[in-house]
Image 1 (spheres, helix red, strand yellow):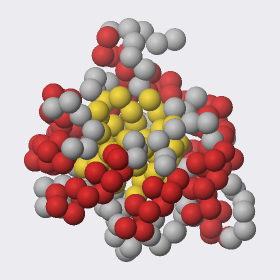
Image 2: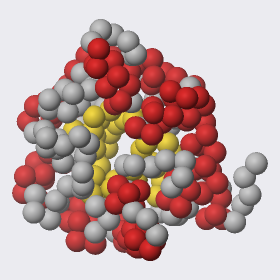
Image 3: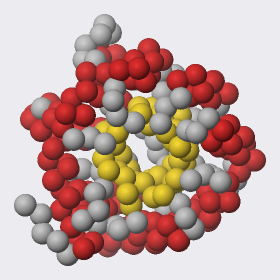
Image 4: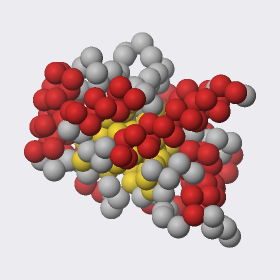
Length: 250
């Protein structure tokens, strides 16, 4: 069975810290616990308004964790400078609006090609793995490939929020986009809104090699602990992955 990588997003550990100020709980400590629980990487979104992860968090994560760091960032000169200063393993370019509570959709790579091209090329020059966070739309997948990004992360939010036949429809969109992207030579990731209840079907998409999950894991940790929440997610991911080859999980 091919192992499906799990990137643990620690943004909302910082959200809890920032609600009261001070230093507790520490995102870096959460990253280290995630590593102990079996995470394959750490994801952190440095927003322009610094609502959760801070510049100091990124500096410490780059220096202190032994897992690949995936920096989620907007396509701005400020964020590019920060990425080039710290050289994370990966940079995922995401859309960002100050008034949103969380990322509400994928990048418009079709309309933003000329703007995004510079950022993709500059990150690639420093051997930073570039991914584009996009909706599972054939035009966006094609545009991401044309832009030269080696990775796309499919936005699973619409799937996560849908119910009944609409959920089946959104799952088929994810499958089609993953197949299309893989056929073009892209590495396929997925994330946003994934929980214990909906992760198995996404994990069963054979072209997807990495899931990035954060908010749910941090919320579930309130009830069972961070390591336990991550380990349970890993079990369910393995369950979905086993469907690809017909294997059974323990």
